[in-house]
Image (cartoon, rainbow, N blue to C red; front, side):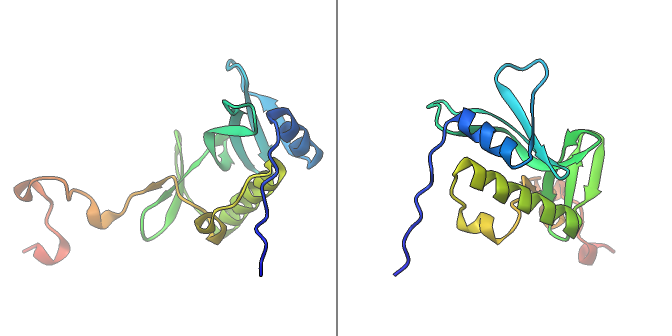
Length: 150
């Protein structure tokens, strides 16, 4: 019978110490008190101490860095993209693998558990499928689908 591995609860300072030991770059977020940006291998996350002072709380979801900005993963059904304020970039396999490895290593350092759906692959920040675009509009205002066009 398999034994359930209990998460190791660590304080925020212990987590920061552990990620530094694992060669993550930890920097104070400029102009924001008590928030830290943790990065490694082209990916980053912004965190702060959890309310109960055990562990960390995510402020900005993890993502790859584009021009120093943390990108958010968007799933458009046919392809995934990374979005920043500067634009969207295709989510290539190497970027997704790097992001997944970054999240797994960070969770291990923080003593967090990994949920089943997260272990299967990268979880998107938004799901924006073309086929549902405009479905909330009244029927008369919806754009015609390809097979409905004259």
